[in-house]
Length: 189
Image 1 (tube, rainbow, N blue to C red):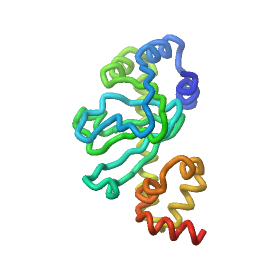
Image 2 (cartoon, one colour; image 1 turned 180 degrees about the horizontal axis):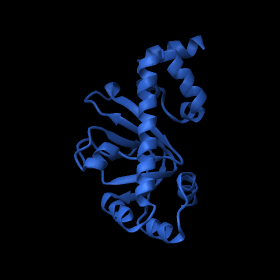
Image 3 (tube, one colour; image 1 turned 30 degrees about the vertical axis):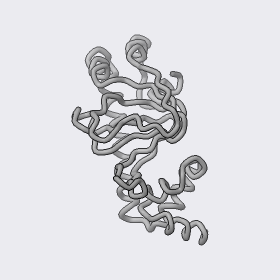
Image 4 (tube, rainbow, N blue to C red; image 1 turned 90 degrees about the horizontal axis):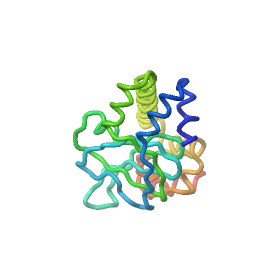
């Protein structure tokens, strides 16, 4: 719980009353390794803070080798199929715990209660949404402006733990290359 407090304290000062109300709405969930905890076409009903673990965001395909990994979330980050969460419509992708993952989750309805009953709720919601948008925008710009090798090097520099804990087939999909192309990039480097 302290990790969420530290994260939110970076955004704004939260009164004890608002913090108590917010934390009363959180549910701790432990997701086993390799478990898909949001399936395609399910409606995302939670936004979660990762206490520990790694989550993969991906578009499933009939052939698992063709799945498209487009995001990872780590300890001390929020994770959600955020577009589905906001619109309460079916998700176009899935969320999978790559390692045993512990989450603090808040439901859509409980978050609305936080927005309506606390002074700081809307500010935290807006700033968290802005951070998620900036991460998404940065990823899109990297895909458009950097070579596959540059994307791999950036990933290695920014998130070295990712390369230790995530299968290379997911890393290759994330940077937009085949597993064979990633293997060649790794040999060159």
